[in-house]
Length: 160
Figure 1 (cartoon, rainbow, N blue to C red):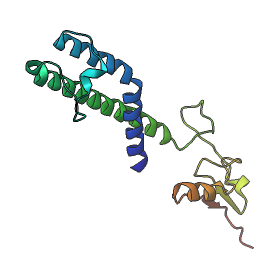
Figure 2: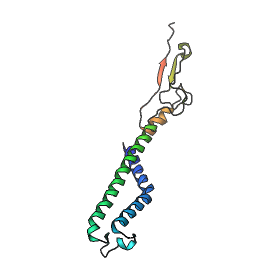
Figure 3: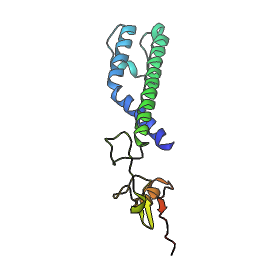
Figure 4: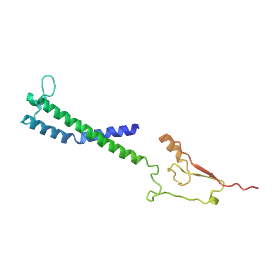
């Protein structure tokens, strides 16, 4: 869940950073339209350090439009961040990252005679000797907090 939240925040920040220039141009156009003159830095400076719109009758309308644009950007960033986060976490959910990826379903078969006394089969998809276990699940379990282990198949013991 924590990686999902981080991904969501990263997506939101990325969206806002990428679109900051476009958003500022839109704000400048809106303010110029409301005020009727070019936007300069002196419009945003006052003795108290607050933003001042030059015409008092347009001031509340100007502020409302700026708030609406900011809220729209925030909502858009949240939506994009959500979908980016969903896409990235879905890609990580795949358990098989390297074995027979070109097939629809990985199927391996072994004759019971080949098993002998005992064989361990991989269930973590990390083994270099797949379908047999080579102990790769130990590193996988340590890295992910998982508890995967091999499937151990014992052959028939001959009665003597």
